[in-house]
Picture 1 (tube, rainbow over the protein chains, first blue to last red):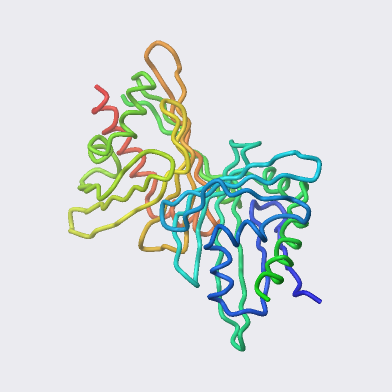
Picture 2 (picture 1 turned 180 degrees about the vertical axis):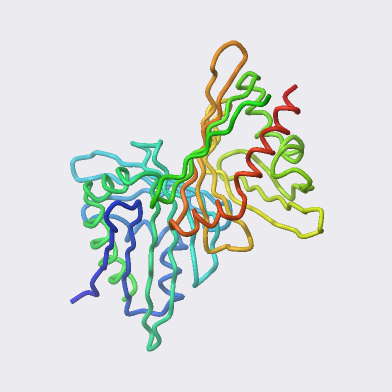
Amino acid sequence: MSNPVTITAPEGLPFIEIVRDFDAPVDAVYRAYADPELVRQWVGPNGYETTVDTYRLETGGRWRYIQRNPAGDEFAFNGVFHRAVPNQEIVQTFEWEGLPEFVSIETMRFTSLGDGRSRVTGWSVFPSVESRDGMIDNGMEHGVVEGYERLDALLR
Amino acid sequence: MSNPVTITAPEGLPFIEIVRDFDAPVDAVYRAYADPELVRQWVGPNGYETTVDTYRLETGGRWRYIQRNPAGDEFAFNGVFHRAVPNQEIVQTFEWEGLPEFVSIETMRFTSLGDGRSRVTGWSVFPSVESRDGMIDNGMEHGVVEGYERLDALLR
């Protein structure tokens, strides 16, 4: 049984909170966010193949990857890192290139739970309530849940 | 008489919209956002002296400036540019270093109104309604109104 993902999307506000615990120490989890070769292996829904175009986790660093579903459709995402504090915090912008007018900003906080366990708390802020709702309607939860399960496997 | 600034802060939502027209063509206004030496001269409230630490308007470029009030207190701000489309759009993150846990994201859209006039529409998105309200309570309007009046003078 994998750890549950808790997704909270407050009614009428443009936020999404995502909390997930990992049975791995915080530095290992952070490394899985910092190394593009690892990111490629776990991010996104099952059955999608991710190609990392660029990924440099440091202030001002850019990231961009393309996800390809089994039907061959491609979805590209990009952003910049506002801040990266190893084993503690990442603040980044997030754009789906299909809707470039809606850029969101995400904060991921990494905390140790002791006993070799850790927690990632994500806070996504959208430029409108509608774009937040659209993200949820487009199956974001699937991608998060399945991606984190593949991250579990990678951490083992 | 200078052009009015229209600031809209919708009740219970973490947004601020700022609309301002300029009696200058859109490329001149964009240049005043793109050139750090010009930014230094107009940004912020009257009586503050701005020192630009870094300012590179391009995707992934960083910006940081320090404002010093007449009493000698210093306020530093920084962010990264998610996107910059000359004469059209700037998307950037915004952090006041006094409260680094609240990073906002701002979109500025530049549109021509014809007859050598133009409009800047800003959309700021905060990570909480409280941090949005805090920004307003801390006299943001003053800085915007006075800064844009100095930008008028610069454009003349």
